[in-house]
Length: 218
Image (tube, rainbow, N blue to C red):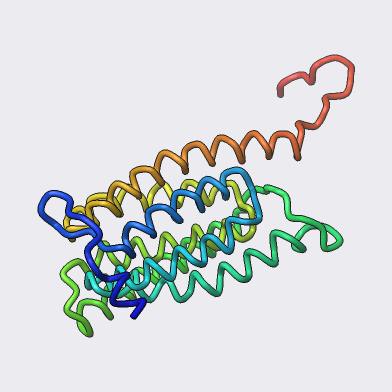
């Protein structure tokens, strides 16, 4: 059975078994983030395959919020796939843009409410040993994925914040290969941020200053 094979041990790291799901999640995850950084549309189907693998991995590790998050990622992946193709002006391909103030405010409110709600749910309804970091990384990841579907350059900052929490969290839960994966993600996110910012400067060049004397300060 495919699930039995995926949850079987591929090899051991520091005395802890690494499953085939974790190994394949590592490979598809690195490829996915690399494709996102290069704005390749193929990142979406690769990303959907990746989250299905991670869903199985996280559920067996007791990271229930992260496991449930992968279901949302599948829906967001389908939406992002469509939006990158047709979400631009006149249903053209989407270009990189910035997050506005109102959007930031809405994201902050949603992030706080989502973190608090998941924290209470995980603490009271599951046997999770890490309810707060699990809830916080879930909220950050959802907000970052939303930004990614809209090609908001600031979504990389949200991914960086989430990865800085994910790395020690997965190491603590014994998912050593996944912790290494998120260390690679962190480096790729920095590269992605730089690439999208460079693309944004090409898409939205600075407004030229008309010739004439400089304005006099009041």
